[in-house]
Length: 113
Length: 115
Image (cartoon, rainbow over all chains, first blue to last red; front, side, top):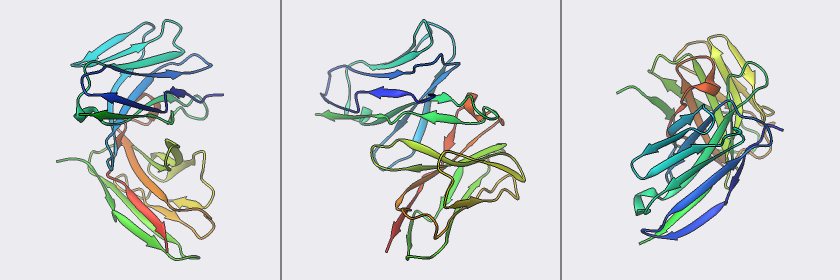
């Protein structure tokens, strides 16, 4: 189907360690979006990837789109306590008018100081 | 500042009651969305609207209703037919109608609980 699988569901790291979350699809993706939701907050858009093999960086965050456009990853270098939250990937819904996204279940990151 | 305003922040419902959650945006966005978030479930789409006076069902529309009479407003009614309404409800908007290719902007959400 059109679902996206995110792994791991939870990740606990020591501050300063790296963190990676993966988003996988059984079908080819036209694009992938990433969002961050802080505890008690709302999702905030981070980035969109559209090209095969694309790599984008935002300070300590590195986003990749697989060559086959079936998977994506978000890597955080040297985590900080401000990175705590749940990271969601989301794909375009091919059904209907393509007017909406399908979200993964997210990876919840906790960072121990 | 432009943004999305959801109200109330917390809402309590008695069994058998309908309740309406408000969502207003001043971003001049065309499309608006309602999501339900349960712990460990991610975001599930309830309804969305790409243009005024038109809306489509999402994956979990049963027990919910919406209207889109104005571009700025997209209220969600949780009816008594929704048997498990306790959840965090998020409203979002996108600039264009093809919301799957645009960044979604979210409101702060409404937490609905059953008394």
